[in-house]
Image (tube, rainbow, N blue to C red; front, side, top):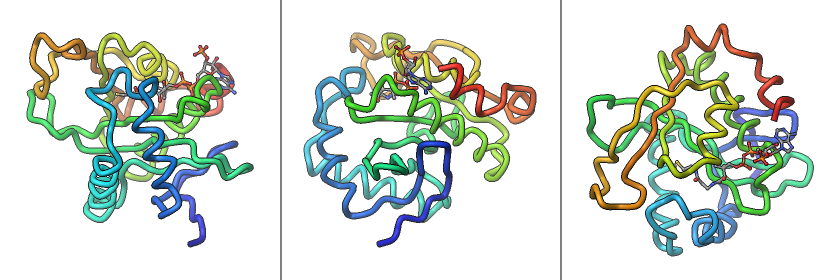
Length: 194
Ligand SMILES: CC(C)(COP(=O)(O)OP(=O)(O)OC[C@H]1O[C@@H](n2cnc3c(N)ncnc32)[C@H](O)[C@@H]1OP(=O)(O)O)[C@@H](O)C(=O)NCCC(=O)NCCS
C-alpha cells in the first residue's frame, strides 16, 4: 500500500497505519526503556488491540494517533497524534496530543517536530478549540516536548485510572487554546530551537 501522508514536516510524514508498521510497533511497545513512564510494557496481543483502537478512532473521528515515518529513510518513528481522553474527569471530554518514539529515535527532535505539526493541523484544519497533553510528573522528556511546542502548564492531577500509591499516579496537564496558538511561535521555531 502506498504511503499517503496526512501531515508532513521537513523530515517526517504522518499517516494512517500500514500492515508493515505492526512489527516495529510491537518492538517499541515491549521496550522497557520506552515504556518506563507508562503503566506496563505491551505484549504483541496488546499492541494489536491498541492498533485496533487507533483504527476505530480514525474511522470515527478522521484523526487519531498517526504512524510517523522518516520521509528520507522510510524508517518507523513511532506515533504522534490525537485521541479523546479515555477517562472521566472534570477536564474531560478533551482532545489529547500524545507521542511515543522507538528509543533509537530519541534525541533528534522528531517528537517535537511531529507534535508542532500536529498542533498546527489540530487548530488550523481540525479546528479544535483546545488541545491538552498530560503525563506523569516524572516523565521529564515528555514534559520537555510539551514545553518545546509552547503548551502551558495548567495543573497537576491524580490519574483516575491509577491507584494513588502508583508511581505514575501524579500527573501534569499542559494545554493550548486555539487563540493562544495563533500568537505562539511558528512551527519552524519549535524544530530549530530544539
Ligand atoms: C517523550 C519522547 C517522545 C520524547 O523524545 P525526545 O527525543 O526527548 O524528544 P524530541 O524528539 O523532541 O527530541 C528532543 C531532543 O533532541 C535534540 N535535538 C537534536 N536534533 C534536534 C533538532 N533538529 N530539532 C530539535 N531537537 C533536536 C534536542 O536538543 C533534545 O535533546 P535533549 O533531550 O538532550 O534536550 C520519548 O522520550 C518517548 O517516546 N518516550 C516514551 C513514550 C512516552 O513516555 N510518551 C508520553 C507518555 S504520556
